[in-house]
Image 1 (cartoon, helix red, strand yellow):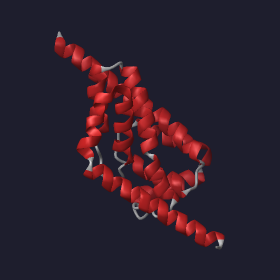
Image 2 (spheres, helix red, strand yellow):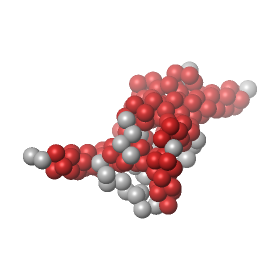
Image 3 (spheres, one colour):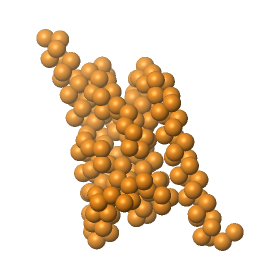
Image 4 (cartoon, helix red, strand yellow):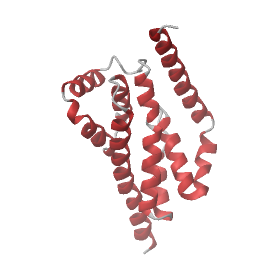
Length: 182
């Protein structure tokens, strides 16, 4: 089988896998939320699920905030941040497959153009977009995958940004709980 054809088949299979994951997470969302009873592991798994959905958000940050009031906020942030980074691989893989849903949007075009023009700053851009609470991070994942950014150059800054963001929300939950209990 020629390499081009094999690559096309692999891209189609990856895209079908991402689509199937999104459907499963949506259908079983109540069961996913029940994972919080398993502590840090549950937070990690919920965060993967919340961030593996593309465009259709699950309430990962809200769960992180609530769990920050119950568990150690630093542990919650690490579990949620690492889970979020792994969950974001769905967007990266969708972009890698060449079938990005948002390819025609102006933001996607600007972001990929900027990332191509400034490749040394790609990791900083991913870190910043992972840290800032926004619905546009999926676009950054698509762009990184489309540009065939090495996986570690996507996953490392994504994990750092997500952990820092989750740290803010986990501590907000802990401080809110302390404030309400006074």
